[in-house]
Image (tube, rainbow, N blue to C red; front, side):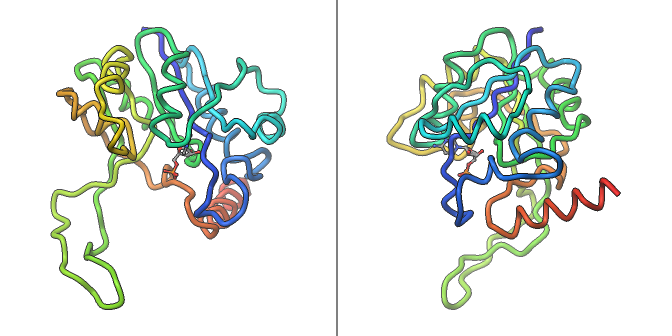
Length: 220
Ligand code: C5P
């Protein structure tokens, strides 16, 4: 099957407190390029498309360097809209939708996702929740039992026709934080495979510093 990696990088990184985190330096390249390289290295990926913000062409060019990629796709105001813009430019049988803000993509996770996709319309990497979950505020609110809850990461793997249909059927009045919930809402089945802490999203400024120091440890 023909498989495309669709990397969404059109966010503005507001919670990061600086510019968009996906274009920040990381290791020998950038956050975005680390994710791109994981898919370039993976033998089963036939194409890579990146979705960027309308004002991010210059930052994108610096971040990808001389990697051989087709022109980027311009995204939208929300992650969901950015993915939809990307899907419109993808063809083939399967798509792996990935957040650029997750620079470290273990090949073993892609292996598990693609295997699960043989018998499901979608597959996502998940990890158990290890902290207590409770309503926040100035004083602590009620606890939500964490048993059975998981954290859902990306890449999320889909049969292309199924996720395109799920996007078309989604009510745009609601926001969606990922694509798997859209496939579920459309009646599809999403398999869960084991995720990896290395895939955690860079959201707050400290996350980037942590990723840099982890990378130093790995590179020594
Ligand atoms: O904001 P959040 O952390 O959920 O973003 C997840 C991913 O979606 C990031 O890689 C970000 O660049 C991307 N995104 C996007 N278009 C938007 C908002 C977020 O491609 N409008």
